[in-house]
Image (cartoon, rainbow, N blue to C red; front, side, top):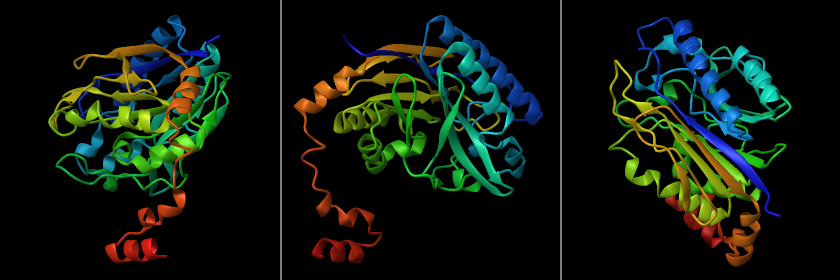
Length: 300
């Protein structure tokens, strides 16, 4: 009998402009997501992931200290405590991406993973932090992650998380597979004209190379006053063969739901023995920063 898991992704527009009080912005986005989470529960979603920095706009479009006030402790902040209650209420695994404060002045782009009984399982901190293209000034806000690439054994599946810019780096995607991930979620914020041609290329490639499912999320809309571009949505699930099996549109709030047969992972990996045929002893140059160091690693 197939091991089916019903999974969901939420993509959403920002409710208020950046000129509103931060507490008001945050409450409006959380209220919106409460309704969308309730919709997912009605559809009997078992594992649900929200979008990157879900309770606000993509504030990295500018460099302003005021946005530091959106940080919370994880798991002891109010948003994760609320998500724990919702997870237990709906018997649903929740992946909740927030702006984390480890201590004053030390902040991370983080996703908390909460089991279906409301238990906090742990967190992933975004490892690859961009500071490129006008409007993606993330190093002003985030410290690179220091927790590696954890995989969380939830009630329904083994879940890994990769956040936005991480998806351009195959190394971490491979480690998630080696760590046992069955579903990897990538909550993102990316705009048309910059990455859209890669959106349906890179993550299905990760799914194929590592034999797992991927849930990719992108927010929607043009966020003012910055207008750095259109967040084009198109959130989707793809299977271990790289086929997109469910996808949202590009213009509106949407809940994407897909029934994923986790038995497909074993079937695909028996066909494509990528883990068996790896040659890790030849990969030392991957961890070398300079050309000279890579040459030395290859010689050794």
